[in-house]
Amino acid sequence: MTARGFWILFVVTLLAVGAAGHAAWQRHAAAIGSVSAEPVFPNLTDRLNEVAAIQLEDRRDSVTLVRAGEGWVVENAHNYPARGEAVRALLLALADMRIVEAKTERPEMFARLEVEPLDAAEARSRRVTVLDGAGKVLAELIVGKKRFGQGGQPDAHYVRRPDGGQAFLAESRLDPRTEAIDWLDRRIADVSRGRVKQVVIDHLEGGSLTVAKDSREGNEFRIVDLPEGMKAENQFTVNATAGTLDKLVFDAVMPAEGIALQDAVTRYTTFDGLAVTIGFAERDGKLWTRYTAAALPDAADEVKAEAAEINARAEGWAYRLADFKNEQLRRKLEDLAKKQEGSS
Image (cartoon, rainbow, N blue to C red; front, top):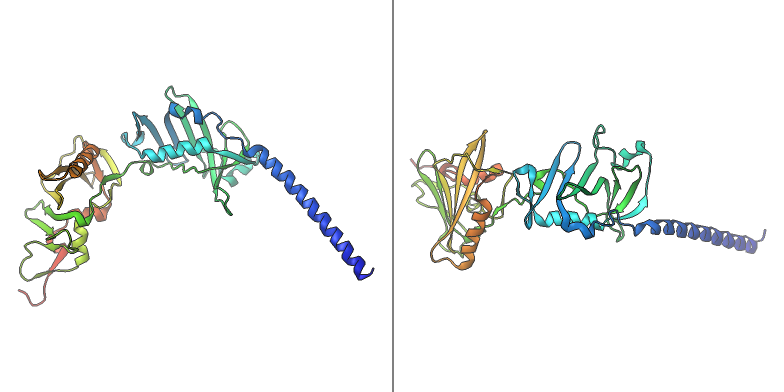
């Protein structure tokens, strides 16, 4: 065969392979397109206002979100308010979910996609159930492994309807977490350190510690009435004592009824007239906190509204904080200052 003949044959072969590949791609794209427009729950968008409860569960944990008036509460966290925006995002993600591709029907393959039954050994699947006010199921889905989108493609999950054997890949913005803490509105207060004028920490055994700042423009807090011969050991730690209420969130919550508060409290006062008092209680070896806010008489209306908001949120509840936050709220002089060398 001449060189020219070889190249002609090569080009013809290349074109034939390309044409075959393109045809296969078109068949594949057509097959995908035939199901990609199909919503997983065709009628859910029109029925979102009927949703009264959402259950999320896996092999170990479960959480139930319940509509309460205009908002949502977490049923298995004493009906404490939920993050409404997160609940709405979950419902919209379910309503918008579209099937991309049909996957296996073989039960023995479900574990690979993490869509196996929840009671299977070492199951990694999660189940989402949406109910109306009469307890009727509006939507139910087994949610499996997430596939992150690449090249501009959306994220997707492997999913399966509990009453059907077919698994699917579906476009999905779902975040179906199954622990109650992930759905709670964990905010308590948000008082930036720059606003704080002083913090007074009363101690159970008597006495108190006060840290303060002389002007709002200043950056450093000082220990008030620091005994002679003592010096603040770490300025960062002193400042951190005044910043505890900055974006303060809880780790656990329970009704405050029946919780006896200790006599000692911690009080935060700001330059713009907000006062927040924190009470403490011991329960089952854990420290719990309670919050009361007030606006000083000359405070602006927005500060008065802030105090009312803190009280509306915290009234009737006790909160457990991260250990380091508890330490900041209960600090003593010896935690912040040490005797200087050579002092008697």
